Length: 275
Image (cartoon, rainbow, N blue to C red):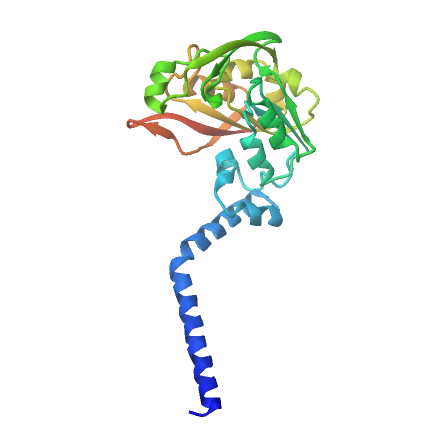
């Protein structure tokens, strides 16, 4: 074989390998590519800018915020956002990955998670941590710190029962007094609230009772609702739904319910104010 024929054969062999690799890649990777494109289209439909959408679409993590359940264009222009029950800031951080609010208030009374919350939101100059509990009136209130911080609440958890459903993490470690303010006081300086997220472990109705004015300026409400009592004195979905709709909101969608032993325990609900 002459050098020219050998070179042609090598080139052909390399081309065949390259084509085979391309074909194999299409067989192995299409689901990931398809899912990425679906997430990208979903985000763009919500109004997320192309640069943010390209980055956020790499995973489905942003869906933890439940903002993908909002109507088309909802994230195109976001005024203020209020995150009540911010914990370590994951919800707010994920929200920043898909939109650019003009201001964000992260309301969290738990002293143990405040350093992590402040660290998570430090890169976002429009974010402010408000280290209080939101509730029906101003003053001080007892706060039940649990083994897992995301179970902590003003209310007493049904620890033994919840441990059976979720595993350990619901036992109260200590009860401390924390400052409480109404949401109308906390958000009083915000002319508009595009998204109000409430995740306060059974204390939702108390928060809503101190948020009449804020709800009147709020476009979308995202909150966790339960179908089984998790805390002493908490309010379930039917009661909260009545309160929210009385404020002029329409239930738009549910997220994926969290189930155990064949029973739906909680779900994220998304409401839109229509009047």
